[in-house]
Image (cartoon, rainbow, N blue to C red; front, side, top):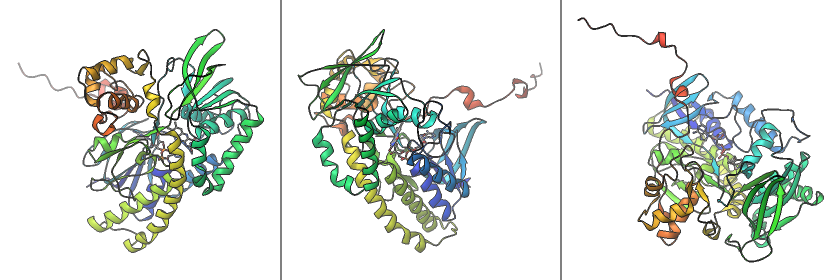
Length: 485
Ligand SMILES: Cc1cc2nc3c(=O)[nH]c(=O)nc-3n(C[C@H](O)[C@H](O)[C@H](O)COP(=O)(O)OP(=O)(O)OC[C@H]3O[C@@H](n4cnc5c(N)ncnc54)[C@H](O)[C@@H]3O)c2cc1C
């Protein structure tokens, strides 16, 4: 007999809304997240409510996060925060490591809402201390309330460029420059979707106003090609690039800063559905490999659901509605197929689906247009220099990846076995997407489907042996009686 009807993995907007919908339908639900509280990446709970640096004002994200956390507190959902999920089995047993040691629970159904990982396309010097992810900068700003540096260069692509720059300025920091791979035309194409969300458009204009008022130089169609450490800080070289993200001839600029926040989009965290061998497909627009699912998150495996950005990048608002849909789908399916006693009847649950689908479609339209700005550009990976490290856990360079491809490595798992690319603590979450793009271009004429993806392995996250064993005393270990002589 499983411990719970539903186990939800991930406490962001998708996971929390999935858990709330399933719980409100009368199911016994448990939710796991590695963070101390619900909110996920976007609505994260600040460690310090009062910012410890300058006045970084509270945002709408904080208020939405507080509402989400309050709703979860008021519900019957059992929560396991500060718990890292490190294994999931085919019969939906979840193993997690928490502050009091290992925990395991089983469920009739599993909803995977594990969000995304930030993508950084490598360039010379990207592993230098002081170079951080753009999305990682949002964690510093939102969670710890501190600035990433006294002076920061913000580079890469997507809406986080303006969000991070504005937040640094509001917090009293200096933004030396913003280098955006996207051009004016790319942003122009998002206008119809932006108009559908006047609230988010207003927020965007507010960021732009902050940036203009601070006189920050904004370089459109520019990419970061090199970072060098010098006595006065990090020296970054910015070059003009084409629409494919490839540096082109033209005036290069040098910017000195003590932090460089750079990000090139997000990739869905699909390792759990891959581990469970659900069917997957590659979608450049959705950010990478995602589980094949219907619009309510039902995957190819019975009673396995996906929700939120982990099912394809569509943004926070869409993630919340997608979570509700997955929670409802799960409740409907469990009620129908397993005869589970639900507090709400199936017809009532079904009647909520059309409105949730409509709300999801509207939010996803906006989110996907932003995701389009962050999709991996083929020319960008083309321009990685041979000596540049691609896999930073194992120090594997582009030249080593190319050599393995030329020697016959034809899919990602072969590349991993031959070079150790993706075999380190991050298990390819950081380098996997870029390495696959390089392999696809060199061996398969650009086909990511033929290049495949790294197989997921447990432990899903790096962990200590102590986290697995928990606290114990050697004196408590039963010692068998000595065998009679
Ligand atoms: C670092 C980062 C910062 C971001 N900042 C912003 C931002 O400021 N604004 C914005 O609009 N978008 C931001 N995004 C994009 C953002 O992910 C979303 O659009 C939104 O949060 C998606 O919601 P979600 O519920 O699908 O996933 P998330 O909010 O990412 O929630 C998924 C949760 O699952 C947890 N999780 C994953 N794997 C495990 C595991 N094995 N064990 C335990 N817990 C696990 C994660 O820690 C996370 O809390 C950010 C993305 C990243 C990667």
